[in-house]
Image 1 (tube, rainbow, N blue to C red):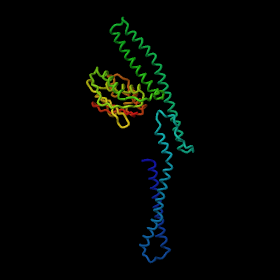
Image 2 (image 1 turned 30 degrees about the vertical axis):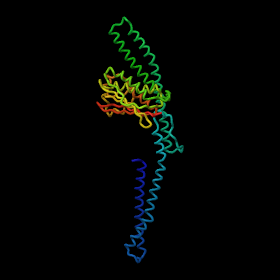
Image 3 (image 1 turned 135 degrees about the vertical axis):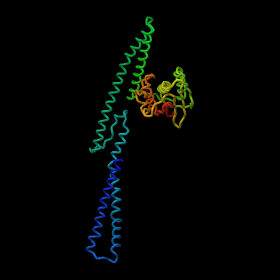
Image 4 (image 1 turned 45 degrees about the vertical axis):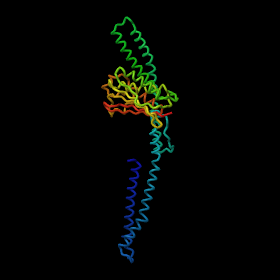
Length: 353
């Protein structure tokens, strides 16, 4: 129950109580005290009492209650209007617009003071987010150089003809781990720059159906070692406005996930259809799926579903976070649906050009 409803309810109860007290006092005065000073008229006492009571209720109590309720509702609505405005403004705040200030009335009342406290709190949060982004960017930048050096040295040692087969296997394994670390650093750098608004996207007409067919060919290459079938169920011609490189990255991330989190001999299905003013893309796979309670977290950074199967699949848990950013940056929407041991589907809706 809202505050406005509670206030109106309490006001109505108090008003009705006061009205009943007034009626009781009026009736006592009219039918007890006044009778002691007047003689009976031509009408009987019962008829006189009922007529007087009706007159009191009609001309005094009922208008007072109606006017009181209407006035109370108007006053409550007027008094709580700033609270509603403050709530609507606060609902629009998220991590990307913490620098925006909530509007203040400037009259110095409790709500104005509360708004000032909210603004100070969001300013502190904005500063904290900025420091986290700066730290992540600086750390990612500093990590790239030693990783590049390590990889170069290991590759040199790998091609040394004096290295034994066992040494080359260890070196190849170390290079794979460095490659994984490099992908994590690159993904974090990308997402941090995106959060800070430092990535500019191109906006040009693109044939999304052509990009889907290109990604389909890449997915078939990725799927061939595990004998996974990749097919295109439907592909409408669709033109969107966006950045070709980022949309290509989006499709590659989704295709890579559909193959990695599939079962040997499974299926990956692509579908692109025009849906009103949107292009609707769906990529499904026949993997193990994700439990319903974990699905709201699939777009979180470093989230990798069932921890018991994480070691069996290469990845760092940033692919869907990057995909979500690319879709959002293109004014689209992305959805995830899965059921254990059934189809897992990622749906993307992008506005048509």
